[in-house]
Length: 420
Image (cartoon, rainbow, N blue to C red; front, side, top):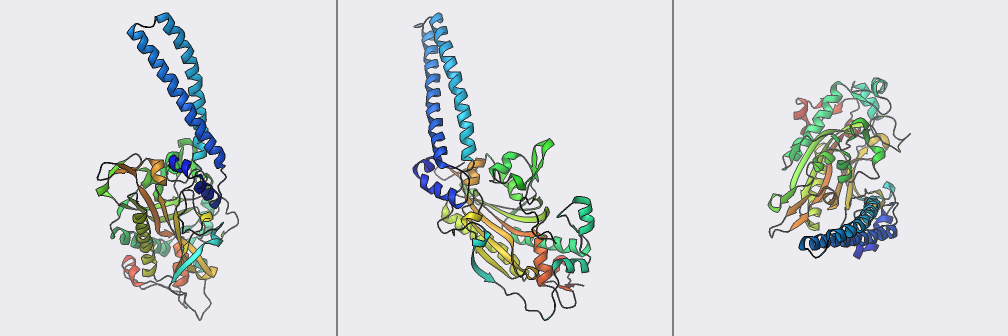
């Protein structure tokens, strides 16, 4: 899951990362388990080698079958006990190593949560209006775009249903972002939305993220919160050729998230819901830090270009170590201005993992000299709805209640300049 040799030679780096990411893991215990596993493997290998030597002596006629039988019983018992102990120790060790984090990049800010994220820059300015602005719930209701009551009757809390112009607007936003990313060389993928536990583990969502995933217990499957999971899990076990890298994929899927731990937060409207639509960018590249940094900038720029074309004010923040996921090396969030919140709200996340996911998925490539390396992986939201609807409706509302449509989106709405 991580390079154990690197861990053994640089334990302080991992102690720091464990502390930065607030992970409940005692590295001293893990290293002791590592030593125990290696010692037991040596014992097991020695016993197996001795058993093979006895078999060779019997075959050569230098040991009688009665003597061999006595030796065999003795070694079989010792080997069985040693193998059983090794299996249990390896299992305990694997549970600990599953909690080892990817090391944050040196320039990642320190901090405990999103309140410690560092603003890097802003693009666009929130409009100054000479009228009382409506929030997105009022605007969507005014235009018959949403039905909360009927949806919650059907599906419970945090449910919603888009209607009429709401459906058309959401589809226009998704397709605009999808087409922009495809136009920049990304291959569209419609991946599975129900995946095995190994897919969630391989992409770093398990362990620690189980509470936010919906499980289909009878089928031992999970609903994904991003197309990244299905797309990346489809690559598991592959050996790529270096001249095929980078691979660029984009998925547009329905996503699911239980929002565990958010009881009572953002219960009104479309900000925090269980079901949503997302266009996600995925990059699989060479094991090179500078190439990964460049790819991170490219997919972040794609998301910024989408927001700029939609004429929405936003800011980009550097996510602090305490607000990062287990495997993330670097992360930027884009927060779009939402007038009703009088604040910027998170709409996009851009993450670099280096080889964290690749090791879990056993995804490698062969370089020009024939050597094998784990790939680097990255992902970034191109657009996600319905959260983007909040920013779009509230920023583009006019005094008479109509919703302005920016030129970039008009071809996706039959040329309309406004939603009346």
